[in-house]
Length: 179
Image (tube, rainbow, N blue to C red; front, top):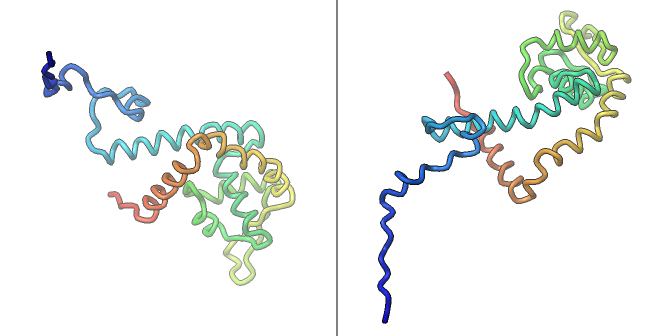
C-alpha cells in the first residue's frame, strides 16, 4: 500500500508564524517593519558603530584621559611627524569631523601633548605638532590599539571581514547626499 503525499498548504504561514525580527530591530526593541531596507541598514551601521566605539571611548578616558577625537588628533600628528599641520588639515583628516579642532588642540596643548607655532609663510596660520610626551602616550596605547579590533570583530573570520571591507569601501566611495 502506497501512501499519497499531501502537499502542505503554507499560504497562510505568515499568519501563524510572524517573521522573526532582525538583530537590528531586536537591538532597537522595534516591532514594526522598517520603512525601507536602507533605513534598516543605516540604523544597523549606527548601532554597530556605537557598540564598537563605546568600549574604546571608556578605555581612552580611564587609561589616558582622552576623548576619541583627541586621540585621533594625536594619531594624525604622529603620522605627519616631524611635519607640523595646520588645524584645517587636521580637521580634514579626522575620522569623526569636529568643527572645533582649535578647542581639541588647546586641551592637548595644556597637557603638553602637542605644541603650536605660527606658520613661516603665513603668520595667521597656526601649525600643530606632536610632542615627545604625546608620542610616548600614544606608544603606551599602541598594543591596545592592535588588540581592540581583534577583540571586537575578529570573530567574523577572514572571509566575512573581507566581505565587510568591500561593502564599506563601496559605501564610503559613493555616499549619497542629504538633504
